[in-house]
Length: 401
Ligand code: PMP
Image (cartoon, rainbow, N blue to C red; front, side, top):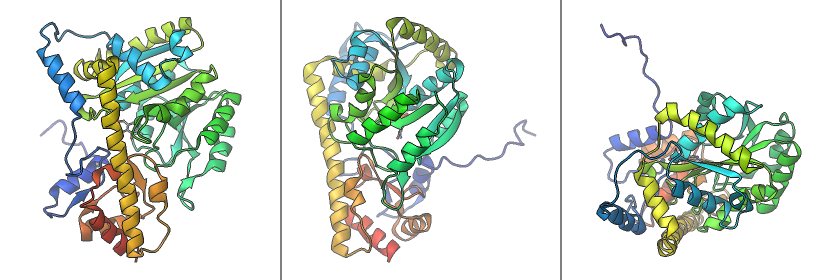
């Protein structure tokens, strides 16, 4: 008998499980709105032109090799990633108060940050918004932190529960870690306004809470890299400390290359360099050193003015297509006279719409219309096209009438 005979089957990941079910469906009209990955109007994955060109250059450059890179990753990549999120004129970067290490996309960067905090920070509690990306509680629990929740989304308005958020963060013990989605909150698509961010900042600083930003969608929310980084930069400008996990999965379409970065902004360059020495001790036994290919692509694009401009144009085109899908879906529901207020579809930001559909309505749409999404009613706008909007609108209409 197998020594593993006692092992029970684990449940499918709730998000990736949607794709498993979708793949099994033979229907020609099936639609996968579960995954958070960009698709073209033709429903195909997109490799950015600028990425293709840089990859060609890398392949043709015979001076390049496949040696291990340092534990902390490519130095150029790290420096340029810090500039991308904090701004090229950021005093924190200029004063060398930031340590940046390459990570295995957003997830790996969150995990390394979490383990560092569990080992070295005086408070072990991290507050997550309700709801949040399903992987957050698991990542931080396994990193050794204790996970608590703060109110974020108000189902009644399909907007921000700002009062609840302020109340919950006010009553968090001093020093607690607070996870903040830098922009394009997943799964709700609801972000605070800049004025609300300023109030959140004041509260966090007055209670000596430690902000940990998850920046998985920079440039994807508004189409502007700088605008989407504003909340993070607000917190850096006050001179206080914070962590940021960045991902290049969405904004450069490098999903499977697993490219990201963790930055820790400190009060002095001396502290930052000691923090970095400890980050190495977290990373080394975990995966030794990060992969070279994706980080080389990102560094080449961020380093070169022309490539950078080309990237921002392609990024804006992706963001604009998503925004146009919001408008088309909203218009299609209005045209059908679908009961209810659907204005949140055009109010919400980023890759996802939190439709407000309940799990029975979601099951109905899957069973009757072959439309796949997570059971919380989150749909990926990036998975929609002008051709599939009518089918989705028909399904939503039937589900709520
Ligand atoms: N944070 C959030 C909020 C996300 O939505 C995602 C991607 N779904 C991630 C982090 C991490 O993704 P990745 O590890 O692919 O960069």
